[in-house]
Length: 215
Image 1 (spheres, rainbow, N blue to C red):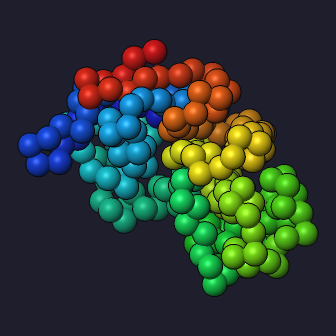
Image 2 (image 1 turned 120 degrees about the vertical axis):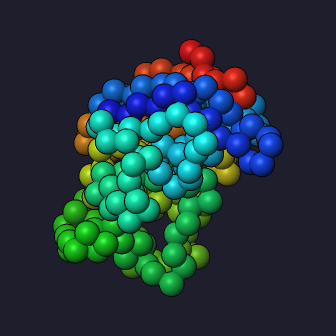
């Protein structure tokens, strides 16, 4: 999926979070976005997903201007074509690992146990499908979140500091799973990160500041 951001601006009251942000992500490309704390990296990612609104400019996915869509239309587009990995996992505690991973399929009216089991194996969680989230480590929980974001084979994956809470060894394993799965499925990946190690895995690194983005 191609992603195009043009002259994007976001304000909270009188304070500008960022302005004049323009970037393109080609189908299958892995782009990392880095920058100082507080410059709006997570907010930018939320705008790309249509989760947040913006005050100037445009965000388009495969030529579809998200600004012209209703909330319901944005939600449907996300459900079908976008995966999102949050720093805080957002795994549902009352569902087991396999049920958490299968959620996007259920929302699309699909049921595919074989695909869930294959995804568990792909992220190194084979045999753990019946465990509850509280029985897993932080690194395992993040791999559950990656598997859930990829199970419906989205065209675009957005990842917000997916290794931010992990030790270096676990972070490397999580990045291995994330990159391998997006490459295998030909998905575009936009990663927001403070980690130079994680950013170094990208095809391209962009620096976000209050004035925009630069290479």
